[in-house]
Length: 140
Length: 482
Image 1 (cartoon, rainbow over the protein chains, first blue to last red):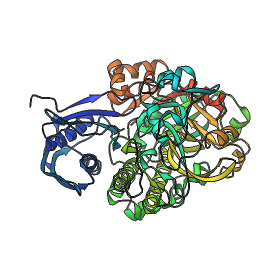
Image 2: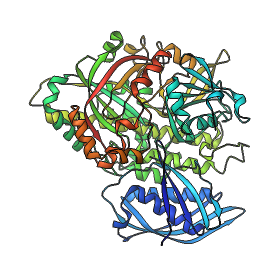
Image 3: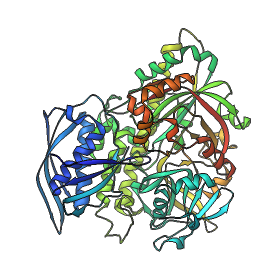
Image 4: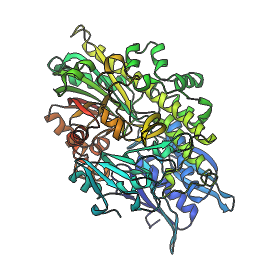
């Protein structure tokens, strides 16, 4: 894909990344890819596990936190991690934000790090000439 | 950006940022530190985060940072804020994702010299008896049983016959926070929790065998069952996926409630609602479930540790025992009474990386501890000393009965990994006489001792500032990390 999808940032106690995407669906997919990259060797994962995720939130920042949190719950419950994210629908209106997506991944035996939560701290989705970007801080 | 000149020194180890520093502060922000720790703190965003906590509606007196303060999210780690009940706020992010992350300490009649020949076997055996790492591996329970754990906490573990009732008595809140209601906990949380009871997790969670190296206050040490030259075992972990999900769920659901209650915040992670609102009551009931799960979790792990000792020592050293010293929470919201403007008022004390440190005379302690104060358990970083202290009258007067919780990181995990490989660190620790067993090399390197503040300095400050009194110093001889 050529361009960086995410970059790890320095954080004293927790983990933080900066994520980019040419549009919001790509930002959401790259954020999920970045989060799982912190936890496992994503490129070694299979794609046999598939989950459909459907969410609604008050705004796009809340939707991004909810999306990643939902993936963490699936990961912890099924002992899986995910590497491909198909964002089928992502729309925003006055009532809030909605998402429908598919996550593909496989079984894992262990993780490099356990992420306890996806926080709102420093989360501001910004528009740039190239698309969208935000920082994300994870509690570990 | 906060500068040194914005901070006033108001005591030998106490600094204050006045409420006038920023327009949205409701109360001043206080920091227990010395000049060097204060300077370090200016290097990250922890003081900005502390100032943010001073904007919470209903906050009384001042918000506080302990000397182990470091940058977190929402609250700084080492942060304390008390909000007036009934309508002051409760903030899930101000308690954290790992609800009732805490420490349990067991002490033994075994001496270090007796244990040393078996230390490697003990660490390996603990690794087998206490599940660690990812996801499941804990006791599998039904949802109905899990709900019982959530409402009864440590009592459930005692009734199942895993640990004696003396363990429960030597636990904060006697291992059970009232007001827990499992109907306020999501199915997601229950799906995660029912596979994880009695498991350690990973990250900075650990089990550690220590030598009690030094006693500072013999009378308290005797009451706590701590003898110089004997060993102690520390358990550091929390409420696992169950608690993480409770926090996630309520940080999510409260996002829509801010407007309803007219609350404006500098950081969405501080999201909060009035304690007496339906949302606040639901969160507190769910948080209590997660806190009770964590008490049960550490007790069940204590059972695993005793099994490991039995396996290794039964035919070697007859008559060994491991008795509980205490069990404390360091990520929690508690309903307590404290003095505000000369009057006792009910408050919700948020402790995020801070320990309750109630002084002498507190009736919620076992009788033998009441004349001395509550034991405060402060783990160091891996490979360095840990400390046992006691709560004081000073902490009751000055810090809503709170003190520090640990060493406090000064270096990111990424930087720690760049500086040392886990394998090299293991070798260094072994040279210092510390047996290590870790789930991964990277995880080990991230917890390298040089990534943390000096815990001795942190505990010296709280001791000299009068918000806890040092009782004993522990030196690690065996470490197991998830």
